[in-house]
Length: 628
Image (cartoon, rainbow, N blue to C red; front, side, top):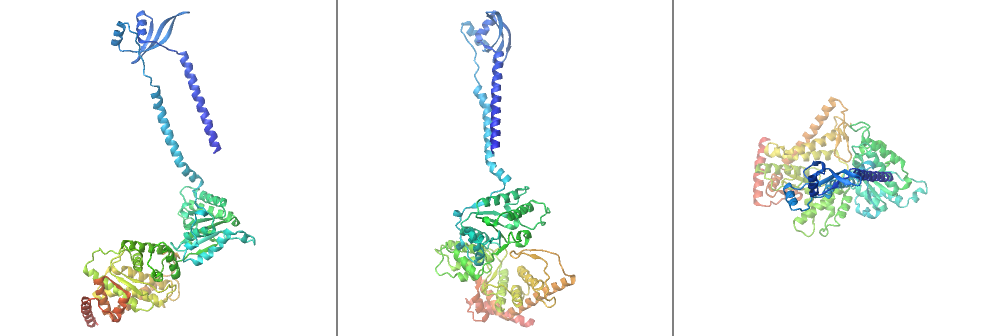
């Protein structure tokens, strides 16, 4: 910057010298070529006397040479005068009136005509320089990280619920940042890097902010994608700048979100090993090796794809401690719901355990969205507080989608949908080890769901037996089995059911070794993400004969469970027909009502339902007997 100021002063000096030289030359020229200004009447008089030697006439000015008597004799000098209208000059001369012409000065106008545009363009240029100077500086020096000072961080461990194990792992980091001498006294070193791994929405970023809030230290935050640019060298510059800032404000925490955008294994890019992303990763590895752990700079990163990270990032001395931030269990979901309900007006004595039971697999972000949706439902209904009914409807909305009561479905399709959903529910209630049915509905929801059967587990499950998987397949196929039993035909409504059943059967054969024909052999060759529902297809590592056996076993499992579902519905046909009648009239049935219907203790809601059930049951049972 001092060099730039010297260059500016140097340029201004030369500009002033040039202006002074121009003025000097102009004065010299004017002194040599001086011109005497005379009036037009004097010009006419001199013309009459023959004193004019030569003239040059323009539209406004007459210039030339005139004779003048001096002490040295007669001399010719330059003159100039302003022309006057000839007719007017004759009359003025006739009356002996002294007259002359004047030229309106245009100096100010001429000066403004070329100075104003220069000032205008100079102002525009100055404003553009001021606007783009920070961006230009960031392009050259690297983008600055977002810095949250200790007094601005209000997040603490009280705001993080359902992650007790992860918080225990990070308490050591907080203690080190508060009292580093306690560790360095014995020569101990804290891990340089801590990697938070887990599914999206589990609270990895919130946990990192809570660590900074508990430690009362500055918090530097950047996303992995902010390091990667199309310009060569910018990503590495940003990494260097980030660590330089952190060392100046130590002790502090550096947090890199979505590390997989930056730390993907080298050699996987489309440009080989020389693209910008890999250079940025190399710089990050160098910086992690270079800074001293005793300084008090802790690097925390988060990712939901640890399987694609470069192995050099995960070796000891870099991200050598990995903290799992997993989906919360039932107790964790209860704690998370209580945190999000603090700022919401809920009814007294609301059962958070029941809501937690309805939300297996939900992460913290899902539960926050659930509380917000329930609150919006209560507002629409004009209620003062949010009740359990709104929470239940919010769960259904998040799982199955928004209700579409205005969608017109013809009576034939509604009947097919009713039997299809009752078929799912009856098979689920008849088989052991399946999740209880909470609600059945034929109200269209979401993008393509024309009806749904909501099953709510009573507890979190981490292992499933072969029998339980087979029962799930049978439950999934119960809808199509009910269609075939009632209408002797099947519809396209079971395409999603077939997809789920086939996936379960394929996993049983290829991954779990649950078939006698193939035995306990693992045939799955795809790389699966532990936290995302994605996979990378790999090469098949078995023969064509084995592939044929796998296909046969999958087909055999699905066909056997389809027959199981069909048999259950034949044995409970009265419940099937009665439940379909209730669905057609009321559009919904809860689990308790369906259970009473299956056990024969159901009291019909109306005479119409009773008549429909008896007639339908009699006809269908008769047809079954005839067909054997």
